[in-house]
Length: 456
Length: 148
Image (cartoon, rainbow over all chains, first blue to last red; front, side):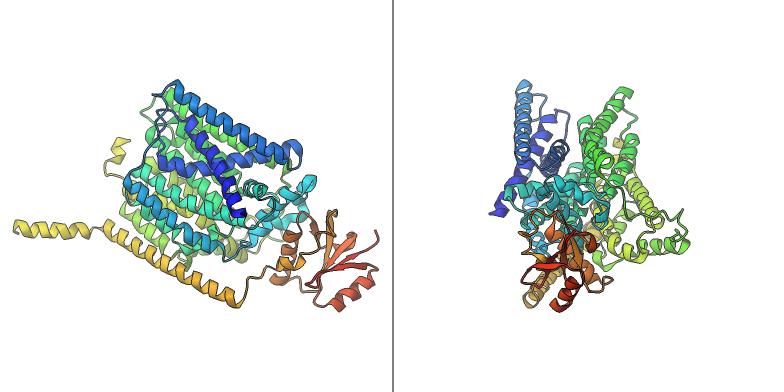
């Protein structure tokens, strides 16, 4: 029964996302049905999290009635807006985009991948260590804490990283509101859902960008990797970060490819959501936002058109970064596990620390966790070397390069943790979050026709 | 070279392109991954049958009713706090008892949880600080109250 109720909760959120996506679409907006299907749940869950976060800002405790009423009102408004825009001018709103038989078959194959995900998620039904100590712990406070919910943000709770944004706990609370108790099935379902959606989004994104049938191979390579399944279904927030990062990059690439301001708006929105997942997500969102401001500018468009595209990106990002900004300004107690090694005399950022970080960083790519997948991707990129760095996808290598550099610098700078332990426990997870983007890069480069550069 | 021979060669060459070889390697990896994951799932389930899943936090259940209106509770253990297992017990106690705050600085609190290696050790310490045991759950966790 709890599973059914939780499914209902997340289906309702997905509908919010669907109508939001479809109602803002215009005839020029060019998201495929596959992308709409795999973006809707993520967008809807973000809307749900924002509604819940606003509830805590307004009432300082969980107000069930308010949350349900706002969901109902938002749903009604979006549906109304959707049908109004459809009636207003059938020519400006696209009729439902369709799927071909290959896409349908691929979708069925991907659906089958839910079985191993579901089974994998039950190996540790309470999730990994961080799942209950950081995420589900906060969700319990939000659900049951009443006005004391802010106790979870006390400095004394440093083990639970009180400075982490609240996206995942809020999504879990939404499921628990439907089951009426903190049932363990809800975080399990959330983790399976996001893991599956990430694979599906990778497939749909590649299909839209390249039309290549190899897109299904990329999704299967991701969803069959035991380490990705393990991290994805461990109820950590990393899989949310992975999903929203992929979503924002795919929307950016589609916006560039189609010269479409609406998709740039979605890219901005997903960047905003990404910033609300984890501090690494905030960092990734910031890097991508800055890169996108340059990336989305196209020579063959007028200054006005270029401005419109960038304005759409900025607007989407601004609206959906507000929860992160509010959280950081009002609620976050700051990072309690940070020592600036550059100014610390007792724990300095020394050369051996950087050396070890670099060695472990490169060695992690060769770890048996990946079963050679990073090497195969490297092979794929070498096969399409020139295309890998073409202008239409330069965003990905630039992002990965800057992100890796900042992460390595942070490992060196923050000397709070013993470096070997820290790298052992976190670096693999960081690479997992980037794996879908790396697969997107490889397959997009391989799937491009030879004259793609000329087209752009 | 004759035309049929050229056709045969180009037919095989199309199969031996680097991209196709790359795709084949990837397919092999996917298949190996699926088999590996299936194998590790079966192994995990078999292990679970022999050693059921243990979440230390459950040993702190059964005290919620007594602590219903309490916001904070102290936590005392005589175990080695440097061990991962002890850290896990404390962290999982915090998770299970949330939204109650569990504090390692037990002396400051009216209510204290005693998670000791033996009941005798716990009772000796409870007496030494002048607290009164008010509830013991079926896992041996004792809740004591001291005057504040």
